[in-house]
Image (cartoon, rainbow, N blue to C red):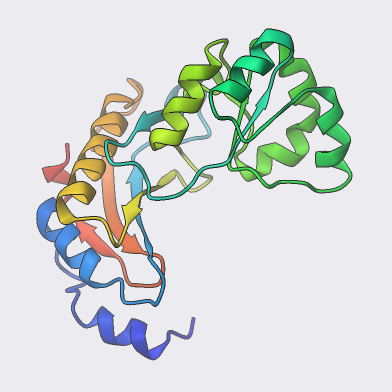
Length: 230
């Protein structure tokens, strides 16, 4: 993969063989975000889980104390009083069956998170092929299938992020923007790592955190010492 001049220049600041302390890693990764836009800082966590086994799956959500710096658009599937409640709580879109053709046929996906009341999951289930691959399917574990739509919307707007294993057993989660202070990024990172450590499946033996890397959207990754995060 061909890298740009800026990337190669910033990469010189990173010692690839080094495992940085969390505080040091945050300071360094913030300095690597040199693009003209406000880059997102992401955490990439490789675990000792084997996601092919049901008892080694990890999926959950956590509210980052300083949010993600991103405006999140929320779609809520609900009816009647719950639909009114969702609209009052600040949902960007609220609807029921009438939204199916718009999503299935017109490819409408102008939302970042989908919340549904339990009684609407039969309807939402029909969108599995569209929402599933994009990681948008509501799930009770991440708090997006709930009767308390007000709390779900408030948490999401406040900076709730979902973490889950991808096919390679890695978790990718944004922890903020390059414009955040080091303290804000550290708080968010620590909050995320505490949640992931707490979600460790009992079936996983040996070292749980195999590698942890912080990286800006356009810059190189910084390896964090996983022993300092356990």
